[in-house]
Each structure stands twice: as structure tokens, then as C-alpha cells.
Figure (tube, rainbow, N blue to C red):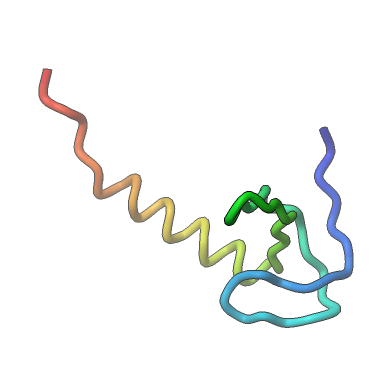
Length: 62
């Protein structure tokens, strides 16, 4: 599947409108669904947060 940037509204943090956004995934709330889109700066921030989280995690003891 090819991901495409479209013009739309960012659903994360900045709440900018009419900017290039990419589909991040579905949101489910109270039985309803919505497609969540994010702009590049917010996506970069989210990826950095996720990477920091993954780097802080330690493997579980075996």
C-alpha cells in the first residue's frame, strides 16, 4: 500500500488546517470511527517520542 500526502487538517497538537497530511490510522471513540491525519512536523515529533520510548525500554528478564 502506498501512503500519500493529501491536503487536510492535522489532528495532533498543532491543529493546522489545509496543510499536507498523511493518514496515521483509525481512531475509535464511543463506538464511532474517524481517520486521523497528521502533518509532517507533528509526525516527526511523534516518531521522536516513540524512538525515545523504545530506547528507554529494557528487555524483560528471562
